[in-house]
Image 1 (cartoon, one colour):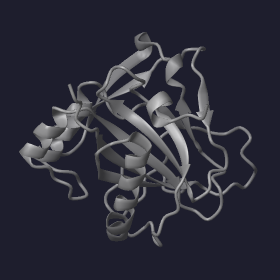
Image 2 (spheres, one colour):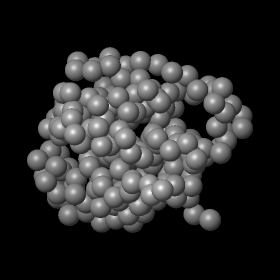
Image 3 (tube, helix red, strand yellow):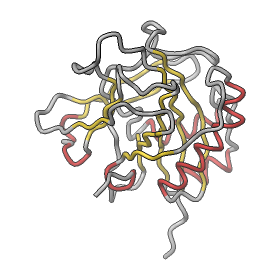
Image 4 (cartoon, one colour):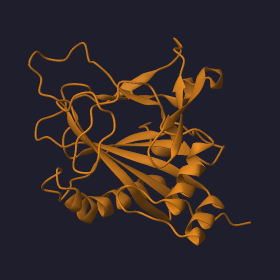
Length: 236
């Protein structure tokens, strides 16, 4: 069966966008955020979804992995899943304490409601060029091939907060997938952290150098948004 966010932590969906200029942060917040919130809601069955930040990446942007508003970052060629079991819930708390760099800020009541409920952090990745992706595509790991003993925890220091992430030891049993030549109307939706423990919880992912990349392939340009998806409250 096709991969879904719930069963395998990732899925591909067609989803056209009305955004005209992905270099315009204001247009992204005004137009794209609501599009992605509806997409993630449909993919996860969430009752409520909100985008808390985004990153535009450009293969010609050099080597910086994080960018200020209005700037582009480089592709991340490193296996990771964005959050650990400690930093997933803590990221929600920091959205109340200091807010997100794009202006999102939760109230303490909203934060308490989310943390007391089932929720997950879901990314959406899209090619933003008219031509298909031909260099540094994004690969995702089949979660059924994960061994918890291979998880490696590491910290990241930001100006306003400390993050924590999982990397991964190499394991020959790992099974990786990617969607070749992704078009602009295609979105790769993947779950980077999940509070519920009765289903796959982590989508390890990385950009990679494709050995079949054609000579002269244009640099990749993409956008990823990060969302919190809050599930309907469980009934007794």
